[in-house]
Image (cartoon, rainbow over all chains, first blue to last red; front, side, top):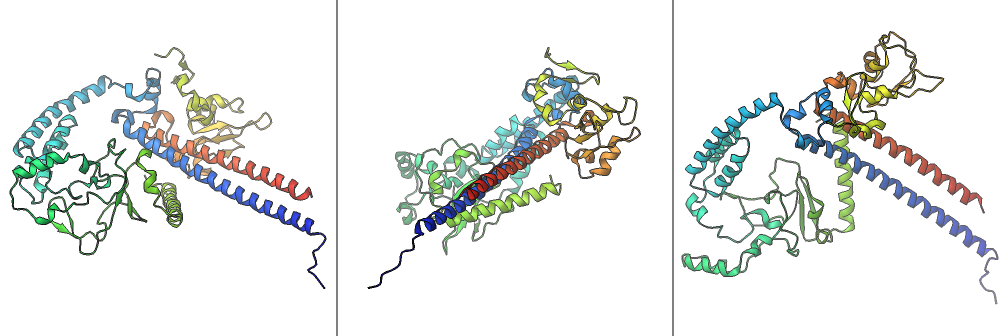
Length: 318
Length: 152
C-alpha cells in the first residue's frame, strides 16, 4: 500500500522557510521603524515651528521689533524675556498707552453701564478694562450694535438659561456643567416660575451627546464654545439647531469659515478646530471608539495636512 | 550684568547663555570664531568678518582652507577670491536661502526675523541629523541582513 512520501530534506526546507520568514519580519520591522523615525521627525519639525510662534506671541512688541544688536546686549542682563522692562524710550510709549488706557476704561464703563449688566457685555467690559483699551471699547460698541434680537437683557440677566439642553453653551462636549447644577436649586427655580410650561420639559433631556464619565472636565481653560477638539453629533432628520440668539437654523453642514476636521466615530463625530489642544484633553475613552479603519484614515489625513503645511512653508507662506 | 559675558572684537556682547547655539553657528560672533584659518586678510572684501556677516562659517581643512558654509541654507562654497563679495556670492549660489533673502547683517535683523531664521536653522539641523541617522540605520541593518543571509 503506497503512502505519502515525506521528503528527506524536509528539515532543510523548514529551515529555509524559517529563514525567509525571519528576513521578511526583519524587513517589515525595519520599514516600520523608518516610518516612525519619519513621523518623529515631522513631529519635531512642527514642534519647532510651534515653539518659535509661541515665543513670538509671548514676547512684547518692543522686543519683537528690536534689532539684534540691541537685544544681544540685553541678553547680558536678562535671564528671560519676561524680565524685560521697557527702557526710557519705550517707557514714554508705555505711558502714552496708559493714558489712552484710562480713557478707554471709562468708555468701557459707560458702555457696560448702558447695557444693564448684560451677561456678555459685562464680561467683555471686565476683561476690556484690564486690556489695552480703546480698541476694546469700540469693539464693544460694535458688538452691541451687531446684537441679533433675542431675549431681553433683563430676562437674560435674571437667571441662567431655562433650557437645560445642550444649546446653552457648547459645554455639550463636556457635560460636567449641566450636572453640576444641584437638582434642588433647579426645583426651587421651577417653583418661582409660571405654571404654564411645555409638558415635554418634564421629560429627562439629554444634556449632551457625550456619554463619557464626567471627571477631568473642570480644568479646561479654553473657551467652551470653540474647543480645539470636541465630541459632537450631527442633527437627526427634522432636528433644528438653534443659534444662541434664537434665530432658527438647520445645521446639516458645519457653516464654519475656518478650517476644521470632522471624524465620524462609532457613536458620533469628533470635531477638531484650529486651536491648540492640550494633551490632557484627548481622552482615551473617546479614542476607544475609533476603529482601525478610521484610525488609518486619520493617519492619512494627518499626513496630508502635514504635506500641505510643509508645502506652504516651502512656498514661503507665513 | 553677567560677569561671564565676553566682548569680542566686533563689540558684540554674547554671554555664555547663547553658547548652546554655537554648534548651529547661529550667531555672527560664533561664525567669526569658527574660522581657524582663512586665506584673506581683514581688509579684503571677503574677510572673515564679512564672510560671517553674510552667514558663512568655516568648514575648511588645513589643505583647503577657503571653504565656508552658510548656517541657514548649508550651501558650501570654496575657491574664494580676495575681491569676492560674500553677500553677492551667497545670493548667486543660493538664491533660495532665507538669510540671503533678508539680505541684512545680524545687527540689523529684528528679533522676529532672527527667531524665524532660528526656526529654519533648527529644522535644517533636525532634518540633517535624521537623514544621517536613517542612513546609518539602513546600512547597519543591511550589513546584518547580509551577514544573516550569507551565514547559512
